[in-house]
Image 1 (cartoon, rainbow, N blue to C red):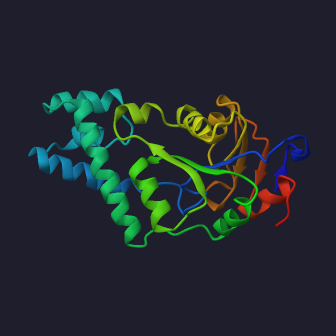
Image 2 (image 1 turned 60 degrees about the horizontal axis):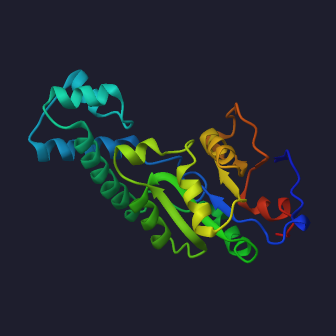
Image 3 (image 1 turned 90 degrees about the vertical axis):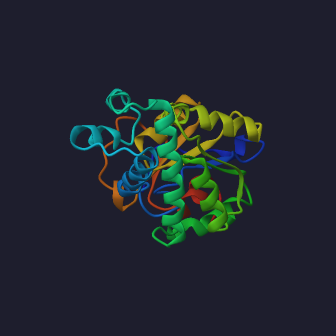
Length: 235
């Protein structure tokens, strides 16, 4: 692993809070499978009594809220904002069912959180849906976090995804701090940290081992167990 900056925790009156991304950092897999979102779309189309095909279906199957998605909604006679929210509601239901079935598991180094929580306030901030994040914390008994947040369902929540720092700033407000460290596995995580005035640490795993970054994290690690010695503790 490569540390690009040393953290002198002796200059801090308290150890800085540690904020974590979820998908690919705490649970295996870089995100909810696209098939979950497609199945959620089919659920909503059935509820609306609609059966678009071809280009219309492909536009509606876009995970992002795009102009093409909105245009396709108007083409089939539904409100784009309402339809997007309905699809996301079904996506979070299906993603939780997927997790309940054991399709995704904790990363093996998550046990590092127990020791880290002795010296740092911990928080979880994810682009995944807020109900899904809450389920993961409860299901896997991740009781270390002072604050957990996923994005709200719908268009507004989509617009506030990282690299927008909105939810990171919400975590800082909750913790009552302006200084913290954010650990993520995507370039957008590092960008969001920078925009929120935080130190971003980039975690490399199998799914992003060869990724090239256009933004500089303060450090790169390959395991959560490397955080404690990086920050001046022991592990």
